[in-house]
Image (cartoon, rainbow, N blue to C red; front, side, top):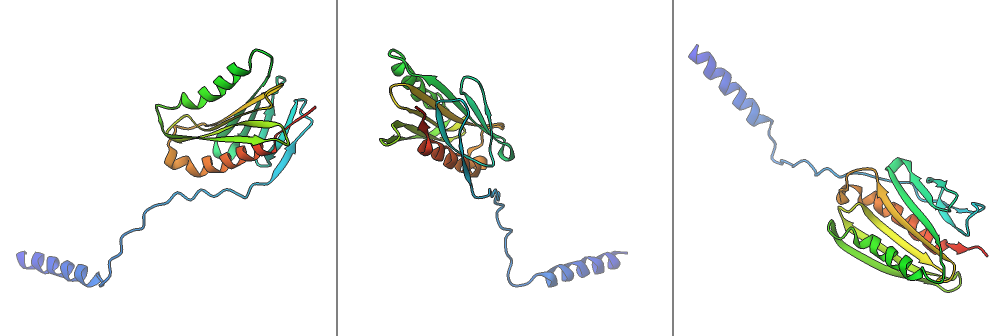
Length: 189
């Protein structure tokens, strides 16, 4: 009995050693392969609001009567919330402070908050784009105004627990759409 057990152990040891070759390769690290189609844009017009801009054709726009909008990205569980306000003689400072405060409310969870000023003299638009890196609730925001009549803010939110590393490709994709919105925005007369 002892001899059979020794032969079986020896057989499996020889089999195990003979199955090894000279090169042992580790398993490659897993990479999340989120790929999105190239964006194509269409101008959002005739929405009854005093502005128009280009929006990704893959997104679904849901508008309200007060010109606030939700731009949904169903494949990513993401939404860009737009809020419109009319500028009056006494509310521009408050609107600007609220637009700036929105990004910095995420300061606790943010690693970095980068701000990029925006100015387009031809279209009479100026504002600020914010990129929030880290596990914040909203990773991209902007505000834009003509300083006399119109003020628009936008914020990106995902319907999942914020894990910046995992959702970064989706953040980057939608952020490019938000830049396109900002750059293409025109005030109607």
